[in-house]
Image (cartoon, rainbow, N blue to C red; front, side, top):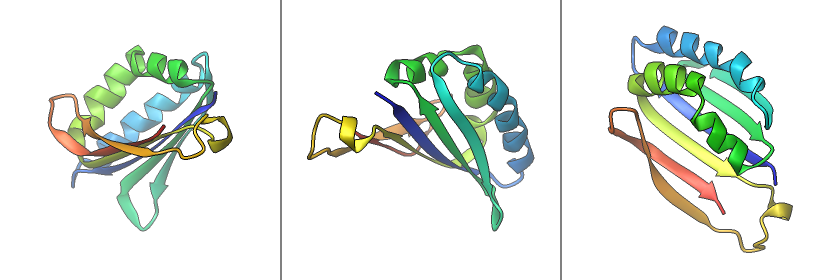
Amino acid sequence: MEFVVIARYRARAGEEGRVEEALRKMVAPTRAEQGNLGYQVFRDPADPGVFVLFERYAGEGAFEAHLASPHFTTWLRGQVLPFLDERTRFELVPLADSGDPGARLRAVRGEVADGEALGFVTRLV
């Protein structure tokens, strides 16, 4: 079942360039992962500190493999998450595939590499 992640990051003031550079370095290796169906990074033109990631995977296992990849550890955990003021992540499955017509939302705290809580993760299950 397809697994989609939409993440919204707000870079800490003065760290926008560092976050942008690290996110750019994530694109090629992530798109090359087995099970990755798409990986796009967007920036808000009205607020250059805001980045949105749109990620598609063949299944939740492919996303879990992405989280364990060296480029995720180096660039996301090492050079993005520590420099954010806000982080929101949605983990989604297509409604037709959810197996639960009354699909529910569950909020889980998002964590950065040093354990500082940032925003919430909302998951459609």
